[in-house]
Image (cartoon, rainbow, N blue to C red; front, side, top):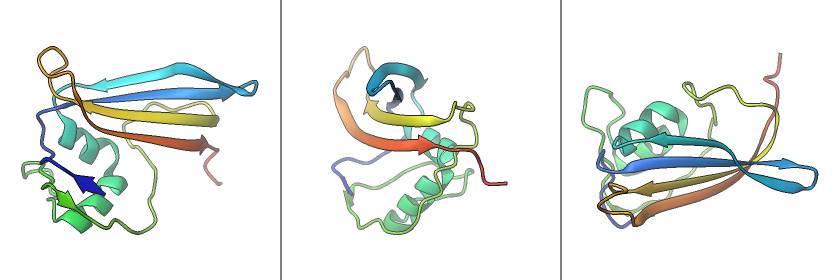
Amino acid sequence: MTFRRNIEDDFWLYVDLALRNNNEWKENAFMIKFPNVGCTALRDQAPSVFGIIAKSTGAPTDKKERCFIPKGQYDVNGPVNWTFPNFPIMPYGRYRLHLRTLGDPYKDPIVRYCAILDCEIIPRPG
């Protein structure tokens, strides 16, 4: 994983989910925006993912500290618990998640980071 600039709370985080249905993607099935709290949103919304990144980068996991991931190149390894504690409950199915980060969308609309994930939401094992 390579970060060419420090990750702080100075950017917006956008999540766009497409749903697989009838052998095609239904774009924009769910769209979520986290304005101006990029690093903190990642730490609060995906704690397991942030924990693995923090372990490799030395970023603070304590919520009382300023959220900051230093720029650099990191090897990120380990299993990830893809539980999102504050995310809405989603219908079961296959999704394509497109995550983008931008500076202020009105002043700095350039995408800083992006990720695309293909995932399935299944019932929690009983």
